[in-house]
Length: 255
Image (cartoon, rainbow, N blue to C red; front, side):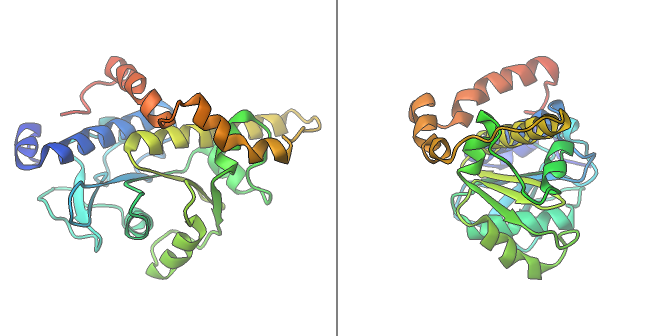
């Protein structure tokens, strides 16, 4: 039987509990926005502290029922470091542990198989500069070719190479990946990634000639974003409102 929220909260640091609550919220918001793929994608968060440990979803639990206490804590070898009745998805571990090991700044890693994201990932030219939403993504976007279900450790160095220092990674024929310093940053980055893909698919479905945004505008987008967000991240700006929405529609993630 899984430990209760009270007992889990009592045996972890305040910093880890906060990370657990925000990660559980990110899972439930992913379901709320319709980006989940039953139980088959993942969001992971680094556990604060010197150890290389991170939190990931219990395999088999739907995203809209994940709680702070049910998240599984593992090390970089996939071994559980806290008692849990749940296993983890080995494919999720391959992708997420590779990124966490390579990027100290990637404290949260989010991966989806959203319909729009997979649709664009199957297009040869990938994400196009068709919308304002696409520009921030294109300013920090890598691509990784499909190598089958991510089970082989041999794929890890190529995935890390293709991500580089980007915030966004399009996994061709597979889906989307974002990284962030917080769950909020990774989630809001995914919001814009998914929105850009949705807009592209709908624009292409319209059948008319598409107008691409000019390169000089793309080149200046990072400075414009910094002005709009007033020196903080988009995640920090949007997260409190997202949590209020979640509290209204699907409370209980902090259990």
